[in-house]
Image 1 (tube, rainbow, N blue to C red):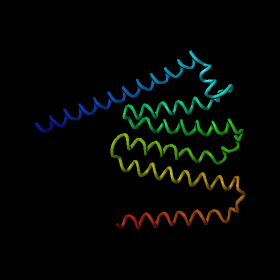
Image 2: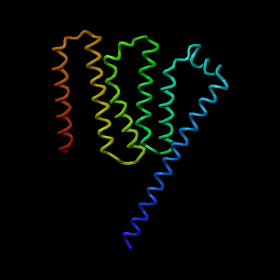
Image 3: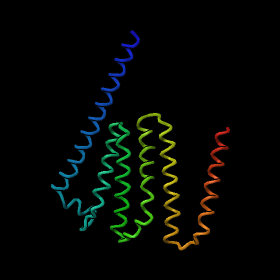
Image 4: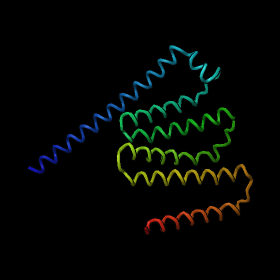
Length: 185
């Protein structure tokens, strides 16, 4: 009897997840359709907001935003990861398109794992719980930002390479010490 109840409960949970996925997917398609329809019906409105030269990376940022919005409204955390990746890469491309600094790919790529980590953190909040995913996502985000700062400084600030790595090792060691001390409490 108990096995039958557990089986029925699992079936209901799977049906709810499938329904939630369908809602999120449908919402995503509707939002994308509304965006493109508005753009077709009123291109002057987009020109007023973004200027005469509508920067193409805004589409990538917008697509990421639609994924994030669908994740939040549909309470489907799985959509947060591609949303943060698309929005983040769109932001990078927007910066490069506006500034012409395409050479920044030499160091700016190191932010992409951080976008994944940020998506994992958002996803863990939307899915309720998943503290392990939250911790891993936060760790990925912090490591990605640190890697970006180090690589960026090596490319742009003309720092002495022999001074940067010991400083990074000291910071990493301090982070491990603080982490182990906090766990002891």
